[in-house]
Length: 224
Image 1 (cartoon, rainbow, N blue to C red):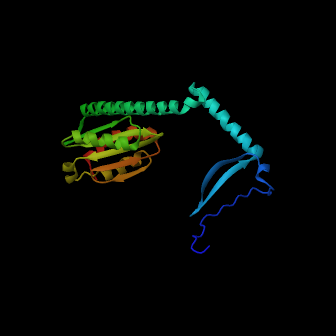
Image 2 (cartoon, rainbow, N blue to C red):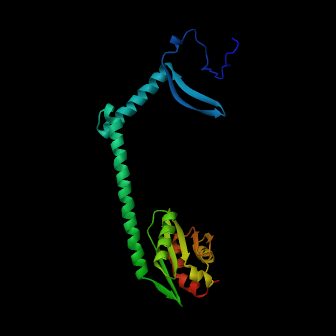
Image 3 (tube, rainbow, N blue to C red):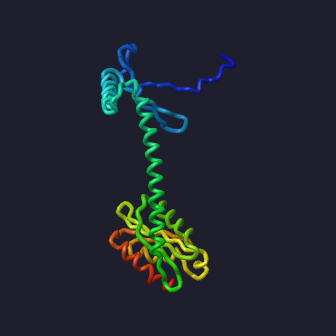
């Protein structure tokens, strides 16, 4: 009819042999949908005994989960919500423990502060969960130093990593975290670099990490 808007929808269902009436199909169960291309989506479905078998599989999965959670099926959503809340709480508590552990490592490392000529430095291997945590720990140590260099190493996913920070006064004297990172990276079989005040390095040889940390003193006495 004049003035009617054209239909912008297209619906095609094809599963092979055509049927005279939909009753011949039996169960029709949509199992998935997704994007095929821009403006085009596709649904996936099962019919007949295939649909019946799929539904029974889902029921069995639900029964199994219900038994594992020791709650009736109807109470599963509430139980899952409770478990998610508990997990969130435990994750927060774990985060607090990690912060306390980091603080303990900072105090211990500061007590072991060393000197390379007139330069104060902190070097050591620490326990962290990822590279970001390693860098953060090095930065926090630097904040506690009025003047100094921090070189921290850690083993993450069976690979050695280093984080280096240098206070601005020592950067002005010619010390460069990026250059130091490249030198240490050569010992652990990898590469590294960064800015004069902050750098990182990674390698392949975990056994060489203690050696790299031991070389910090010599390298600081003769900055490149």
